[in-house]
Image (tube, rainbow, N blue to C red; front, top):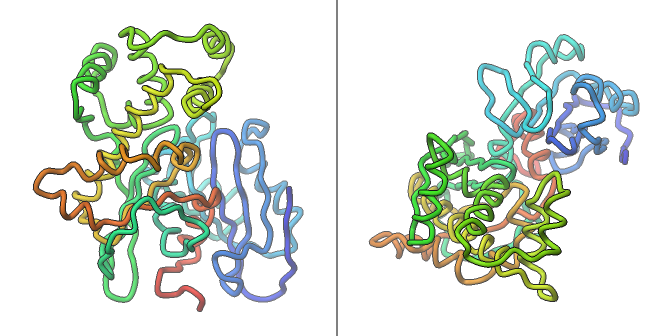
Length: 345
């Protein structure tokens, strides 16, 4: 659906959040502020042969001169190139700029885009799991489980926050109890390297479920087996069944319990690695969908369980990013060059 405003002054930038299922595009002007797009629309990604076709269709409906673009991509960006997860699209900054007749195109990992958005998120954009006692100017951490596990962080350099990428989701998975040790051994039989992403992501949820089912932890209900057999993506079904109070599924609930525990531990690990005394932000496609599970004590217990560092963890704020367009906002902030100290300017 297209939303637009008319404006006739200043410079505009095209921002995008590119996903395997859908792509959000918007035009922002510095004059409007990063939270107020001049125009925006959502497109089904799989119906387009490439990003260029989609962008041209969008810009034909926009009464704004756009001369540059900034796109958030689910996946690593190396030397201005990116491969979109679950899409046959290979993106290249120079090729896109030339094809779309733009002065410049910037690609950034979607977790980094979340980081750029963090300073601009308001109370309505966040659900707070722990208020804590944030240090003014303390570092901020972003942990974003979706299809994969994205991570990023921000540091305060005096007048503003600076955002940095991380591929910490590909660091080794560290089990915290006997059940998770069994999960690690199960995955080691199937993968050369078991990263945290193998467990703490959409793909990870499917791996946990398969492990528990094979280990005989609980019986798979017949109705769920039928639905999973015809599903392209089992994760939404597993999550829905785990949170369903009317038709409980022990196998799915155990799957989500392990996921929440691992996410809590990894969020705590990221906090320690960057000394995120300003707060930890859970972003990506999964946290907002499993909020009832995160709101239970297991997540924060796992987050705080850091031995001699537990006191530090107790004072660290933890928030869930509820704004579904946070990555789009972050891409715009990155492209415009806005930083925390420029809010409202």
